[in-house]
Image (cartoon, rainbow, N blue to C red; front, side, top):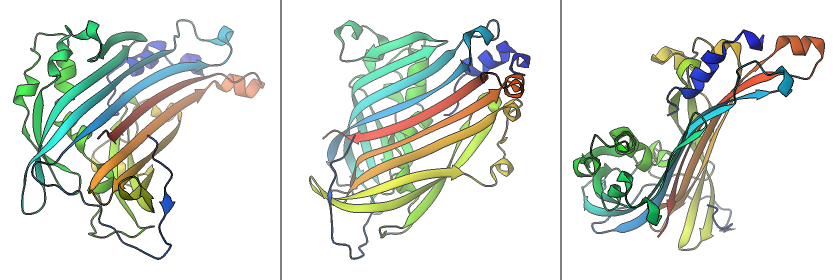
Length: 330
């Protein structure tokens, strides 16, 4: 029964660190005859642009049922964090393969988190009141990455100066450390929809895939096969746009790859997940207009006594979410 689950365990699952780890104008279609397109990024020295990247992840636990039947001491809760970084990128050099060294300069930053239902940090670099916040020191800082034509971050060329902008003794340092870690930078700048493409030319209706895993602490881990499909090739501002849709399915053989498929308590819950995405690629400019992916996984444990007695259903629901968005500003 639900009451048999220790409240401390449920709250512990919520409060441990989360490891899960724009609308485009509706375009007119080109003629129906088959076409193929090149979905590789195109770089040239001195090329620049401004993008906004948003990454959000969190988890929650909630009671579903009459308030009078809620287990004693149980409290709905949420822990999450949300980062919005606006940056200018400038191509410094391009190698013979077409891959580029790019300088990323942070021009605006927002960061918000909840810890145990309470607001921990609420920072906006555009607010005058936040100019003394240590996170404000990141504005104007730069780092360099090597980005492939496929949208893969091949390496972090230089990030030491930006990482040292906030001193280690500052309460904001752990946030900066995560934000500018190698993994944090890769997550922000990798274009997953392009990175798995192997063909030089792609035809509408053609699909390709890649795998992504999430860890959910004591609820184990889950791996998805992200299936990308090239849909419409459509006319928009600036020329032809390729629209890529993504639908993810549970990956096969995940447990054999060294990550546990289920945690010690996952078997007591019914689990469901959704994971999808969307990307718009500008063919003439060889650049991303927008890309977004979002995942949500839920675990529900019903009180069997309520089910058997025909009473109002009672259940504990846990949820984890992750999303990532990249938009061209100009």
